[in-house]
Amino acid sequence: MQRLDAGSDNSYSMLPYLARAGIVDVGSLESPTRSFGIRILAWTSRGACEPLAMALSMLGLRVLVFDATAPGVTDAEVATLFRTFDVLIDPPFLPHALTEEIASLVTGLVLEPTQAHLIDSSDRLKQLWTILPGDGPSDDWWAPLCLLAGMNAPVQEFPSGAPTDWRLFRDRRRDRRPCAEAARVARPMAMDDTPWALGTVDEWAPPICDPVSREEDGVAEMRCPLTEPSIEMHAMRGTFPGNLANFAPDAIDHGRNGATITLSALGTGDRPFRSGALSSVRRFLHGRFEIEMRAAQGEGVVTGFFLHRSAPRQEIDIEIIGNDPCKMILNVYFNPGNEGTELDYGYRGSPCTIDLGFDASAGFHRYAIEWFPDRIRWFVDDALVHERGSWDPTPIPHLPMTIHANLWSPRSVELAGAASTQLPLTTASFRNLKVDAITRASIFDQSVQTLAEGRSAFRKVVAESR
Image (cartoon, rainbow, N blue to C red; front, side, top):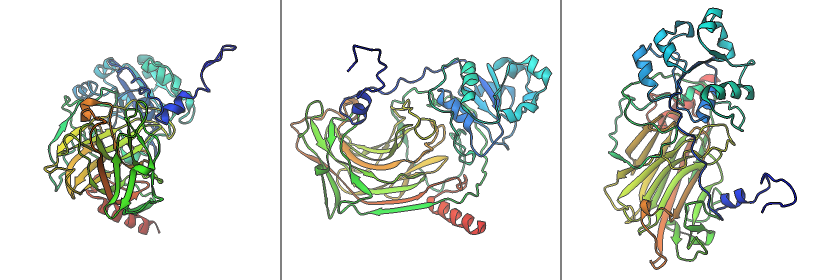
């Protein structure tokens, strides 16, 4: 409601809370306009975290970061990179070595304050350098960066950035690292055109550098057979925009075959169905997440096992579509920022389909997600079916997420067909959830092929530190 006796900015409105509860639907935040023509070079102090890269990504720009050991690039290669990326951070040449060709190409040059000594007064006269103020990252950095990008300053605080060891904004699309397992063919689906989604047209192959951190990281394990209600995986209430079903605990039955969720025509209003969802109490950052699952069959239903967070929204999905249960949809959502940053630009994701070779609704199969700082791997019955690296086509999620298992009915007829309230009940079952997670994954270097190797490396690092 709006007050009639005074000015109002809706700061007290109930609508955002009703939308989060799924009582009303709202569209996702409008994606920032793709800013063609922005070409920024930046040099940083190469600290433990990368705030500048994260901040520029929050402005909707595609950011590529170079490692300290990256080999040089030619002027032609820089020009090629700018056809894909808006910002190149720490390129493999010094600011004073800027060639005339590159200088004429860029629209902005940025130095963190600790790097101001890399140019002299004559360089400043020749080029429009932006030297960020103060001694380190702060909200004062927003104004000069937004001036370069021609954008308004965000309301969010200036980010601290992801750990440098995680190499979040490196390009891993052409990683030629040998893999012992052959993944299956992934068929891309319609991909959203957000600023962080890349096409497949550029031909530049980035170098791969493998720094190893020596942080002491934590290990989290969880085992839930789901044969009875669990405190660790509780039943959810409510729903989410785009779902025709409300979630209720009494739609979930626990028994010998784990947790069985029933989708039925017992909903109300514009949500004609009732179903169920399980969610973990704890959040996890990197690791292996595995479940045995029998998917539901039928028009307009989706069985999901996934990792999810909001503010900013990030997600790693496994979904089985009820009208074609011989295929699996894999999806990743990425939004940049610190914990609490309200960015949902990547709402539509970047999905692809995998042929399973069996009917996922006919029986239980084992599905797993391995989430590393620099890549994600999906497994079915312990066989690798797909692997995605950073910028393929988005960066990899970098903040803690909760685990979810659910059965829902999408409003999108294109996704799963149209559900009918006249159809018989349909069910999905979940059992034997296993989690082996590392709460800080910076000990992973690019040579680690499996989570088991990562855990072994973790134990070695801890032992050596003692």
